[in-house]
Structure formats: structure tokens, C-alpha cells
Image (cartoon, rainbow, N blue to C red; front, top):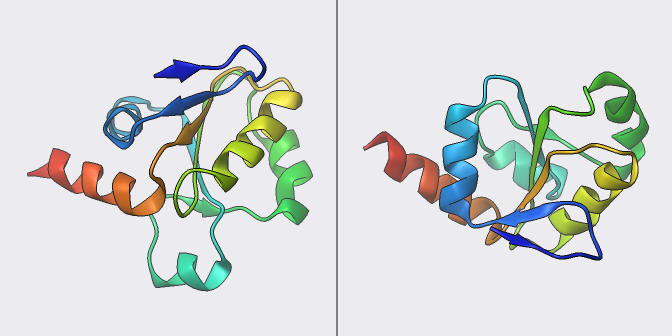
Length: 111
């Protein structure tokens, strides 16, 4: 887990993100990939997140619940994670490696 002092979210390797998803009872998982890719496959219980829906989510979620965000490779998710952190969410995580890495880590944990 790496923490950059200039941001207030954490980047997690896919295996740590998978462990967090399995262990947290109150968790929000967001997929920020294109809607067509989301529809073709996404992590169970993940909501598709577009920038136009951020304000609705900001008002709906608890500031201290875990927020896990993934994209294709782990770059766009950092932008969205910073937006959550800017709105004072305290437990925000961006998944390094993106969707494929996270899906693989979750599948390996079920085996």
C-alpha cells in the first residue's frame, strides 16, 4: 500500500483491494471504465461511475466508509479517488492494475 503525501487516497495492489472487498461489510466499489466495458463485465456489486454522477454519490455515501475505485489500468481511478478525497471521504482506494488485475485477484481468492 503506497501513500503519497500530496493526495489523500491510497493506491492498492489488486490482491490488497480484493482482500478489502472481501472483508469490509460497508463498502462502495466503483467502475470508472466506459459504460460499454462495464456492461460487458464488472466486479460484483460495483456501480458504474461517470463524472456526471459524482455529486449524487457524494451526498449518498458515508464519509468514513471504504470507497474502492478501479478503471482499465489504475490511472483514471486515481483521478476519481482524488475527487472523493477532496470531498473529505477518509477511506478512498484506487486499484493498481485496474479491472483485470482485480478480477483475477478476486477469482484467486475464491479458489
